[in-house]
Image (cartoon, rainbow, N blue to C red; front, top):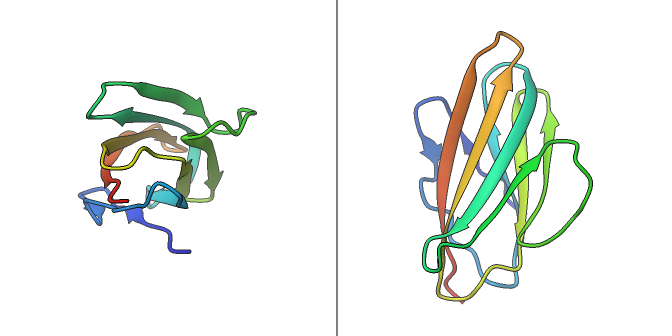
Length: 111
C-alpha cells in the first residue's frame, strides 16, 4: 500500500487514481509538527460532500474513514468510492508555529 504526500508547494501526485474497492491512506506533509487536521472529500460528479472529519474524532464511515496525525504528516483514510466518479480531497491542518495549510488532491475512480 502506497502513501501519497503533499508538500507546501504542490500535491504529489496531483492526481491519485483509485479503484472503487481500494482503501488508501493519503498523507500531507507540513514539514513541521501538525497540531490539528480536518479533511473534506467531495464527489465532483454529484456534489456530495463527506466531512469535515477531524483528527482524533471517532468513527470509520466510508468514503472518508478517518484523519490521523503522526509528527509532520496528516493522513486521511479513503475507501468505498463510486466507480467512474472523480473526488477532491482537501486537508486543512494547523502547525505548532500557528501556520494553517489547505492541500488538495484529485482522485479519479477508474473501476
